[in-house]
Amino acid sequence: KLQNEVNKSNKAYDSSIDKINTNSTVAGKLTDKIEALASKTNKTASEKARLKALVQELNSIMPGLNAQYDAEKDKLNMSTSAIKQKIQAMKEEAIVSATVEQSAKKQIEIAKLEAQSIREVAQLKNNEAQQDSVRAKLKKANADMEYASQTGDTKAYDEASERSKKYSNELTALTDAHKKLKDAHDQTTASISKTNTEINKLDFTAILAQANSAGVKIPQAIKEGLATGQIAIPQSINELKNLIKFDGVFEKAKQSGIKIPKEMSQGILSGKV
Image 1 (cartoon, rainbow, N blue to C red):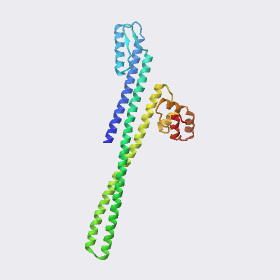
Image 2: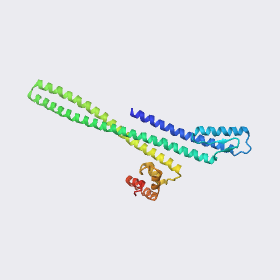
Image 3: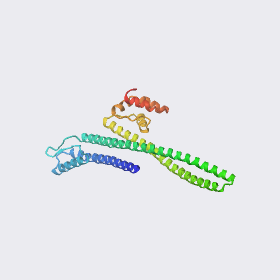
Image 4: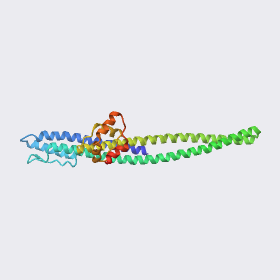
């Protein structure tokens, strides 16, 4: 059930990002057409009608853009350069919004997986305790069989033999159940690791979009460290700027193959280092 929820959430996020990218691409091409037509002088009524329709279509694709064309004055309310900048800003904002929302959902998934992991560990320990108990009973039954065999007590031997078979079957069932529990727990542990990686990727995507919107260029060494999880992801532009101040440290560490402790990068983010 949890995996189905995860798959559904991932699919919805991918669809959302695809739509954002597609709308941005279409909006860019529409703006190029608007720019070409707007640059013409002495437009015909037909050309003005087409230009107005293009602007309306652009607004429908990018709600909140609020581009306007006054046919009588033959004038846009903003330059096409400004329109393109606004489209890019809206794209980055939409990506950040969708990505932050998906990251929050992944945090919920992690919480559920961790709770599941705790339950599985408890079930494994309970199974192991049951195995220990059954082994002790099996050992006693086998010892009773041995004693009955030595004393020639057929009745006692048969009773001990029945108990031995019973406990042997119980132990086999418990061992099989333990394997299934262990496999399930290993899968849960892998899912936790995978989800943490996905969260890091989402947070990285969000901070990249925020940096683009703010006009902040991220040095390559820092970008690689963020992408691989070696550097803690900044939660704001101010934290990112604190990080960039230490670009030289990260570049030298990269060249030397030295891994910067996460505690240090977190201290840099907060401004404590």
